[in-house]
Image 1 (spheres, rainbow, N blue to C red):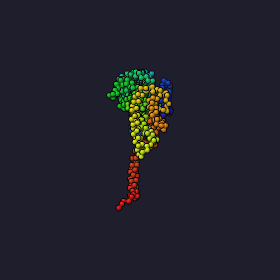
Image 2 (cartoon, one colour):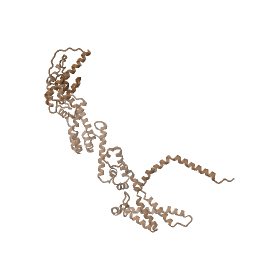
Image 3 (tube, helix red, strand yellow):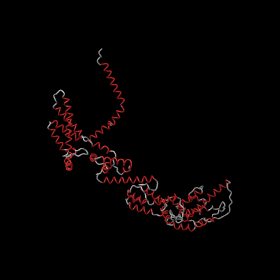
Image 4 (cartoon, helix red, strand yellow):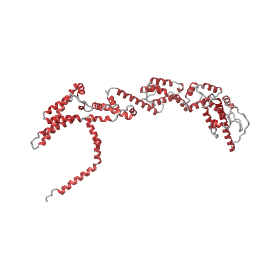
Length: 550
């Protein structure tokens, strides 16, 4: 038997604790002190609780009496033990009359009566749920018992998950046959706990790519009686949406099957839950479809503009291959590159985590690195060769510079016409043996003869070089040396190397944009300098010019 002095130490609570604090501490200790494990400790705890509760209430009554607010009359009365059976009997309406008590008597038992069912709920496990409910039914307190059981489950749904499942199965919670009345937020929280208990299994199925089993498990879950109502079906759909958004291991095909299962319609925006949830899920599905399509293109050959764009941007090959793709690319290829870059920049930014080596900008510089004008180079070479030849045998006339200039300006034009007609006939003719030419050229010709991104061809390029070289050798050794030098410069000054030189110059000077910016900044200064020079010239003419005759 616990004495009045040590009831506070048994409860491990301060002596001035109020009734509410005593009840909370008692409920907390009941979780660790059970009558089945240690009956004597449980009885001591019970006695200490009743004594502490009595002292707290007496303290409140004394304070009210001292204030003179209320006058009480007391009579001697013994209070029976508040065992569960007796507590249930006293809980009936005919026994709920208030009885006068004196200062030394036990407190009114109504709070302890309700707490006995709270204790019953705390002592309830999935294994003894049926027996505990039978006790409550026998004493007419089934609903009161279940209310306390619901409160216990809602305080910590994760810890009480086995009990929630047992209550759903045995007490028919969350169904039309439930005895206890649940509010909307209570039903939602219990449903959420039951749904979350399926998360580990469903996540494992998605991680293992077992989408068929995942779908069958979800169908079985959808048929559970506690998900039969419309509200809980909507909660299930939102829960599935959240599951998909928090997991990346699913395919667009699974989303399509789930849409059929839940009657979602992406085209007409038929769905359950918040719009933001649906929009994010649809975007995730489109992103997955986009990633799957690009991965399929990367796995195949670059035989379409879309496939070539995927290879160039998502998995950039070696420099020579990039330049070759740019040299052979047509308008459809560049448009596919632009579309893919736009999608990755504005719609599917997260896809860049999948394609870690993607380069969204370098491809834009490739056309400049492979494009060049062969006729301009040929014209400059012929003009230089003509000027050199004429200077070897300069004319003896008085206007020999005019003759040289006319020859240098006119002869390259006629030579270019001849070159154009020759190449117009030679290109289609060389296509007849292009495959053999490319195969043997790759084997026989050294790499330094080929431009980056190009392949020097033994027949297509070699025959014109030999023909034109034989023509220039007849003009003397100096012209032959000049021809050989120009051929070497042609090989060295590839479009790619020229683009690197131009980029270096542009980086230092700002390029054409830098020139325009410099001109815009210094326009006024230039005008003033020009006007100053003009005034200086006019002043000099006035001062030092010939004197006018009178």
